[in-house]
Every structure is written in structure tokens, then in C-alpha cells.
Length: 300
Image (tube, rainbow, N blue to C red; front, top):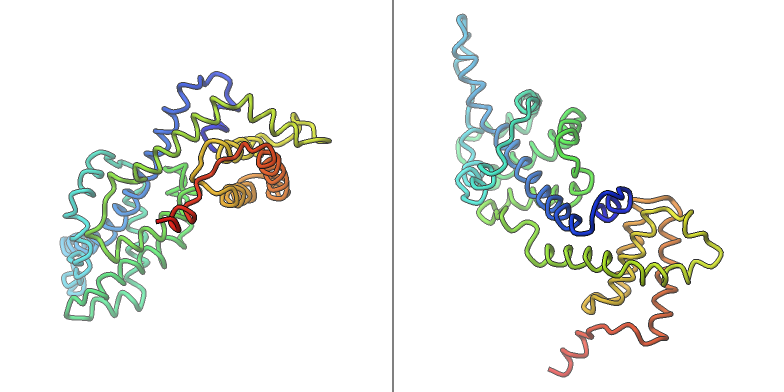
């Protein structure tokens, strides 16, 4: 959707370059996710850095010399740090944002004042659940609610608003099972193939599908319809016609949601009406051929 919008808005972008732009955008998601993991590990490791800094002071107090560094040895933390996929991704992206250190320190300083942290460091053992819980707490209860941290992420990752809904629960899942972390397959190959095929299809078939949409607009002036609404409808019509494994109902519901999230207040209702009408026309003309998995399973 975003790539098509960029193509529609910038006449200088050739169709062949659209795929290159898509590939670049797809790489932004694992880059952002890697950074979120990196940031969290830096906060946990800051416990040791904080202890060293305060102990090295000229007039260090007894309290400064006895700062608890349990967090820096968190077992989940080290499972992530030793994960080969994470190490490869970290080496590839090489984050160097000037504000990272300040944000890490800010989150750590907020953390050490909480009862959750105080309870954690008082526990002598390393209970697996507690090791996971403290990292989840840092991410969900301190990092995400911080306005400064959110500004920091938004300034350095333009895809945060789009990917946050996916990456936040994914981060919590990784903290529960760090050994399963695999950044090289994100998004997976199937999703990448689908994204490329859908983009290429919309570009190749745009004249034909535009005419199908215009036929359903009736009293609407195509030139006055929001660009994003037209893009979403073109994508939906392409799924009707050229992606036999996607049920039409799923297509319509998906693009209604996208219209509500990214376009105008009326867009969801508008896109719903146009796509539903086009779908009925195509069915009547016997132009929609979908794979019926239920029937296929029944025959087996």
C-alpha cells in the first residue's frame, strides 16, 4: 500500500523501481525489531556499567561500591546475546544513533526506582519466570509508556507506527522463548513473495482494474476520490481476480480495516461498498475463480 502510494504520488518512480522500494521497506521491519531487542539488552547491561561508573568515583560511597548487577547477568538476556541470528543482524545493521545512550540510561534510572526491580534484585536465585518477567516489565511498563523513548524510535524508524502492532507482541514472545529468535526470516519468504506479487499485479493490471472500479463509482468523480482509497480498492480487486487462495470475504474485511486505519473517516464504508459491488459483478460474470479448500479437504 505504501509503495503504491509513493508510486502514485511521485511520477518519477518507474514501475521497475517499485519492487526495489518494496524490498527496502520489507527490510525495515527486522531492522526495527533488532533495534528494540538491542535497546532492551543495553538497558539490562547498563546495571554493570552503572556500578562501574559509580564505584570509580573519587569519593565513592559504600552504596556506590555495592550496586546490584544481577540484571546484567539475566539468563534470558544472555540467551539473546548469544543467539547467532541476533548477532548476525546486529552486525549487519550497526546502530549508531546519538540518542541511544541517553535513552538507555533514562529507562534504567526509571527502572531502579520501581518495586518490581527491587523485588527482582533481592531474589537470590535465578528463577526462569522472574528472569523473563523483569525484561518484559522493562519493555512494556517503562520503555513503551515513555514519551521520550517513543520520540526516539519514531525519529529513527519511520515504520514504527505501521509495525508496532506486530512487533510489540512479537517482542514479548521472544522474551518467553529467546532460543526461537530468527531475524533472518522476518518477514518469512511466503509473505515476501505475496507482497511482491501483489505489488507487481496491481502495477501490471492497473488500467483494467481502474476501469472496473470506475464502472462502480456512478455519481462519484474518480479524480476526487482519495488516492489511498483508490489504491486499496485496486489491491482488493487484484486479490479477487488473481489470488485464488484468498477468500473474497477476507479481502473485503482486510481493506475495510486498512481504509479505516490509514484513510478518512468515511473510507471504510466507501471501500466496503465499492469492493462488495465489484465482487458481485465479477461473480455474476463468472470471472472469480477461488480455490475451495473445504471442498478439497472433504474429497480427501
